[in-house]
Length: 486
Image 1 (tube, one colour):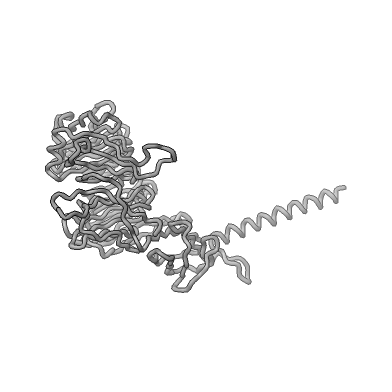
Image 2 (cartoon, rainbow, N blue to C red; image 1 turned 30 degrees about the horizontal axis):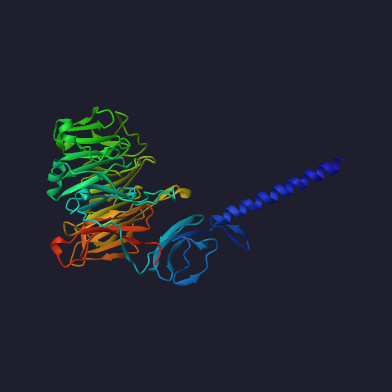
């Protein structure tokens, strides 16, 4: 009896150890382990490739040699650099040089664009300017001149597809405001901007003189926007959305205040000499430099930012942060820039002279700098398994030369758009490190650099002047390009 029980226990234990060993081997192989004659060793890495479109029928090449993926993976790669190329019929080829680490699964997202890109018209009116929400969910546009008076005003159109298939008003233009005399005067000057709140429930309307109106989109279009300067009673030097779109952070000379739009309460954030008022605001927190330390303002309280075991530069001249991410910061000290991960208490000095800050990606993992006229892309990859980061600073060979040349990150932060306002009027999309540059549009009818991606990254929307023999009276409309299929 005892012998039978003993044998049963031994069988159960052997089965358990067998399955535990199989699970351990599976985990090791999934992390790049290689089965050799001498046993299982962890001396290789894995590359896992996700293509966009996901159902793409493609050929994959590793160092110019065609390979077959196993469950979207390239297994058993020794540590080192490799060049991966992806070819698919009807799409531009995709290529990137990657670094493989032993025991690490490297995830790669490869966005392939159709070779043939066709424009489709979205609107049928005369649009003056168009602006995009940071998320790419909406496009906002103004109509200031139309033969139909009901067309004149501020409109928005949802770009993201509604989850309700039978929604009757899905993606239809929606008028959110008529033009008051004050707005007509502001728009007639020609240089103005619409800045949607991150939740798309409010709109800031501003010009170059920082005349700012605030519009509640839930209101009736006949309700007049609020003049922020008149409401506050002092001039405005700069304004930004804050507090989950419920407030606006306003700078006026030496003052930095929060104006709560829900209860009309104004709260002091900081007071300093104008030259010493160094801050950066995003939708969640305001960062302020005081006594060369970083402070954070939220919930009406200013407190020191807790950073462990790092030494900040002796003098901080400027600070930058993404619009919707509180974790990452960029600092300028003298001629140097630093990348700060406040959650990890990591400070990285960007070793490149003569840089000028240009833009921050929404996810905080990439920055654009200018060096003279050229754009340089700084990207960060966190390798969690090794508890380290990998950084790159790459010359994109793209330039910002003329006043209307522009570069901006797409909502997904994976790419950025570049507009060259030359004779050709070229719009280029490139990955955030400057690789795989694709020309989206080469069209002299591009108007005011007004273009962007939707929230899926699969549609490009641009404001174009319609072809007409009568150039002076030609209208402008929104057009879209499907970036998913040829």
